[in-house]
Amino acid sequence: MGKKGGQSRNAKQAITNQPKPSTQDDNVEEKMASTTDGELPGTSTLVSHKFADLSISELIKKGISDMGLTDMTEIQWKCIPYLLECRDVMASAKTGSGKTLAFLIPTVELILKLGMQSRNGTGAIIISPTRELSLQTYSVLKELTAHTQIRIGLIMGGSNRQAEAQNLQKGVTILVATPGRLLDHLHNTEHFLRHNLKVLVIDEADRLLDIGFELEMEQIIRLLPKDRQSIFFSATLNEKTHKLAKTALKTNCVMVGVEEKEDATVETLEQGYVVCNPSSKFSLLYTFLKRNKARKIMVFMSSCMEVKFYYELLNYIDMKVMAIHGRQKQAKRTSTFLSFVKAQSAILLCTDVGARGLDIPEVES
Image (cartoon, rainbow, N blue to C red; front, side):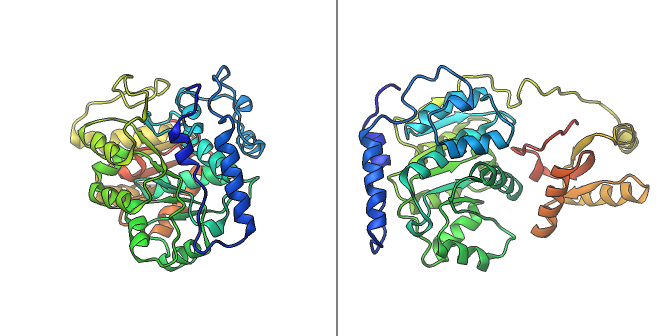
């Protein structure tokens, strides 16, 4: 890790825009050259697990401080040094491990170091499997970049496509996206500049494949520039995820955490279960919710119809609950999700759209 190689140089090639807009972009190229010639921020040995001791922009540190964070999680201090070197990384990261900041911090640092602006097009794309996870990642990115001038954007199915296209045409430097909507814009949105793309993040790769985005991901990877840094995160690793990783990553990528236990849950989560007859399931659920209604609870159900049924039934008997499922309009899903995130105590019924990757504060059950 101590020496920078040709890969770092390739990842920091000069930004090219067509046509070359002004001498200000020449300054961007000079910054990139000086970054490549000097010591890269991640190459020093990481002796501290404090965010304050990272060799990153003070603007990013301010954003982290505003979040109330001081210490890195294991996946963060394992990944960030490699990512700051512009290395490709494949990481097995459990849900709740802090992986979002593990890839966002180096991504924002690179964009700042290159001096990329909206007129240069999109410099980083972060792909998430669901709308809710994309929304959450975007929210964290918004906090992290609060003290910068970086233009960020979010595109996802169910949102206003025309408004998204207009934003992309104006220039979005860091873009969070679901795969279907991203592929749509790559094919159909004129003046969506991505030839300067420097970072591609694939988050929750196993979940992307589980819900059938394999072909979309293959097409997206083919359409994006090859000269980029790729970051690949997955809670579990299997034959399908390895196949996708092989397509997206360089052959000399760094593998982090892949030899850890196969359990996809962090150790701080306590798990339990109750075996009951189907006829007593509702009474057991109702009793549990009634006893814990002062807490923040998520209830996962197997289908949209089941969520709708229990939502109507529980609210009818004065057990106030919220609901998120795939048949709702995106505006409703987003408003419900944000209301639950902000609530001190609430009950959310949901299908698997909320089951993976979401980091909702103070959920107790």
